[in-house]
Image 1 (tube, rainbow, N blue to C red):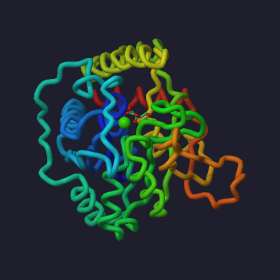
Image 2: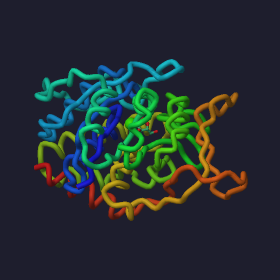
Image 3: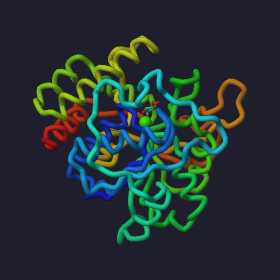
Image 4: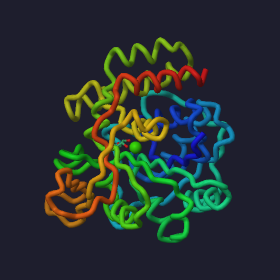
Length: 309
Ligand code: BDR
Ligand code: CA
């Protein structure tokens, strides 16, 4: 299996990314680290522990990272994810402890100990990864690739041209990109190809386990907030798409393209400026996802959910 570390901000779709990563044997989840994003870092760490406990991933360490973005104020996503960051289910006190190390130290230690390069999957703001690479530039050699959920080839969701994860910490995304670590963006243009339809919710419920019941309740909550905010009751399941790309690259088609992060725009701070047509003449610096195999994606997700028992 491919060794991965998931840096996330659960968040309902991050929570589903944790389940997918634990349930699919093609990846080995070495740690879950959390960023400040959908909720404060204390809440996202608690939610990651809740999900690891739910998935019986008792050996996966969970550590919390930086409490705020590099330079911006933290913009939480409570309008989508609620007061807890994972509204829609009453979780018991999780049997998974919070690791005593800072997320950056935990990731650094795992990279140092790993005999093979590790893939980082990042489904929240990129603050922790920017911090890691600033403190330990040599860790680049131990990272196989970074696959993130972030950005969009076209429009955004939090500002007209800015996607949430990048908008929360544009400087972090810019710095990660500038390190030259192989980087893949799974943006809104592909994650919107994974809408949680009524049929998908029914398939999740049909798995018939406690985990599937919790998942369906969480996703039903998020569908309501998506409907209120974006008139989109079939809320897209963003973050698991980044895991899917690692599980089986043929699930998510990508193209090489020059990507820049807008740091100063009057209306466009946090936008991912992606030159799909090569009009700038700049060299490609990232892979950009363009197409999801939606049918196979749901099959993979449902199979992982069932495997969790
Ligand atoms: C991203 O924003 C967050 O609210 C979700 O968890 C996802 O990572 C989508 O823009
Ligand atoms: Ca997220």
